Length: 252
Image 1 (cartoon, rainbow, N blue to C red):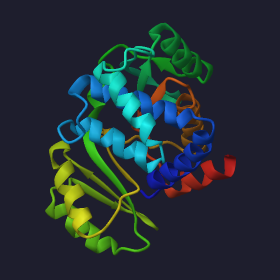
Image 2: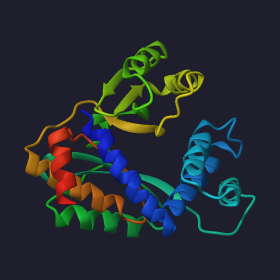
Image 3: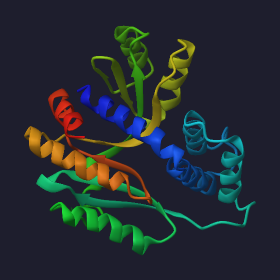
């Protein structure tokens, strides 16, 4: 199942291009604002904020931008737009379940944009709870295995409490309970292993397999959803094999 990491890599490359236009910084700032609003402005005491700040730093977001976003979240900076976080549920073509995380200052605009993309591709919005039960919040890490032994990473992850370790051609993915996030992170740090991704995300309880052409079609719909300004993340239960990944890359 290395296809998942490859897809993440492609999205990171796209993210680097987006950052030049400020789009990634805008999304990261919104994530920091929401985290600071919910749990306070101290990254050491606010786990969610620490993750958001780490992600911003990894994307070379200027320090002053990060500090300003934290102040907006805590209310120290009264200027700027008020945001709220919303999780929409829906279905892509062929019945693939989607959770669409949005941070927005206008719910009507956001739901309209999401619905338009889904409807255009024979998908649909779902009622609250219609899709969410198929997912669970997990700790997730993606590591480039070029400089590290996959077996070594596997052993460290399991010792730290990971549920699953997925080894691909040049990457290792670790999925763990939320409460094991820090233990896995600390274990990797002790071994001087810096993950490409380290976050909390919604993982499907079971994945759905589709024929190659249909899977690529769904991936393109997810890509269009991710390009919407208000969308932070799109989670799906689609199974992405290496063959599907290769077909998707060829179609880009």
